[in-house]
Length: 383
Image (tube, rainbow, N blue to C red; front, top):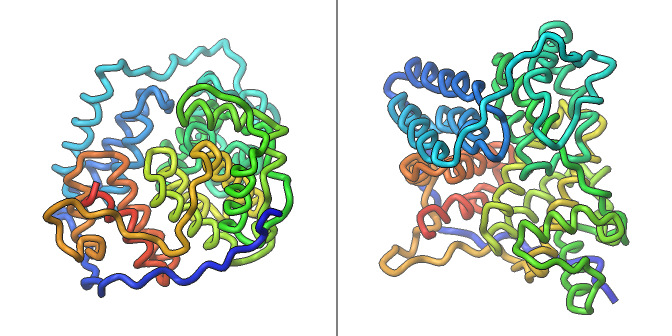
C-alpha cells in the first residue's frame, strides 16, 4: 500500500548566521544604467533556449543589481555570456512584416506556439496591450491562458516575467512574447490519489517506483525522460496529487520546501529551475489571481515528472548541508548571505547568480526558512 502521509520534522539547525549585509554598488545609478543596457541589448535576439545569452541576460542583470553588483561587474557578465553564446550562434528576432496578420485582444491566443514563431508580432501586441490596459491586466491575461504550460522551456516563461521590472514596458512585453512562442504544456496534470503533502506524494511515488509502476519506456538522459513523461497523458494522470495545493494557504511553502529538498538531493540545472520557478510563482501570485492554485498544481506536476525521471530517490527528512571539499571549514554551509553573494557574483555563472538571488529573495518571503534556503546557495562554495 502506498504511503499517503509522511511526517516532516523541522530542518536541522545550522551554525548561527552572520549578520546579513547586502553588498552595495559604489555608484548605484551607474549599476542601474548598466543593467538597463543589458536588458535593452537582449531585445535584439529571440528569447529562446538556443540563445542562452539573450534568454538569461535580462534576468541575470536584474539579479546582479539586487545583489549589489557594480556597473563593471554587470557589464563584464554580459560580455562573458555573449562571448560564450556566440560560439553557437545567436538568433536575432525576426524582422517586422507589415503585411503579416497582427495579434489582437481577440486573436492573440491563436499565435501561441512552441516553435519560436511570431515573437516580434507578439512583442508588439503585448507592448500595445500594456499601454492600453496596463501591466497588471496584460500579465494577468497571459497567465490566465498559459498557466498549464508554466514548465515550458525549463520554467523560463514565468521566471523571466517575474524578473521584469514593473516599469520596464519593453522587457515585460518581451517576456510575455517569449512565453507565448516557447509554449509546450504537458499532456495533462497529475490526477492520481491525493496525498497530504508534497513530500508525502513523492514518497508515494518512490514506493510505487519500487513496485514497478507503469512508466513510459525511454532511452536517453534526464531531459529525454522528462520530455517523454510530460507528453504521456496516461502517465501524468497516474501521478499522485496533493490535496492542499488549491486550498491550503501554506501550500506554497510546502511545495517550495519540497523543491528545495529535491534540489539538494539531486542538484542540477533541471532541479534548480524548480526552485527558481517556484520563486517566480510567488512573485507573480497576484497576477495569477484565481489561477494561482492551478499554477501550483502545474508546478507540482513538473516536480513529480522530474522526480520519476531521477528514478524516485529518497528525499531526506532533514535537509542536508552540501558535502564539504577537503580543506573547507566546518561552517562552510552556514555562511551568511554576504559571503554567498560575493561567491555568486564572482562565479560568472548565470545560474549560480540567479540561485543566490532567488534564495535570498525567498528568505524575505519565508524568514523562518532562511537557514534552509542558505543550503542551495552554499552549494556554490562546495561544488
